[in-house]
Structures are given as C-alpha cells and as structure tokens.
Length: 60
Image (tube, rainbow, N blue to C red):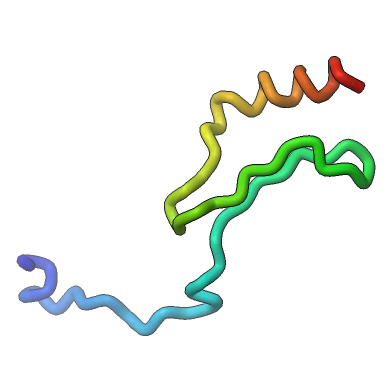
C-alpha cells in the first residue's frame, strides 16, 4: 500500500502472460526428465537436478 501511495503501480503486462515455466533434460532427441510448471512461480528444485542427471546417465 505504501508503494502505491508513492506512485509505484503495476505496469502493463508484456509478452505472453499465460506462459508457464518448464525445465527439460534431454539425451539426444529423447526427453528423459521434465518439469512443467503449474503456476508462474512453479520452478523445479534446482538442487535435485544433479541427482536427476546422474540417474539419467546411469540408466543409459
């Protein structure tokens, strides 16, 4: 509220406001892991990605 009273108001949205995040691990042309965001703030737990990469490498 204080910010709005000081003139800091939201601007006009730019780009595709319905675009959701996603992260993918590929081996060649095959998707071996995917995280498809359900909300704009739904990102993968990046600390688990090295473990996912190792598991994908070991299963090849």
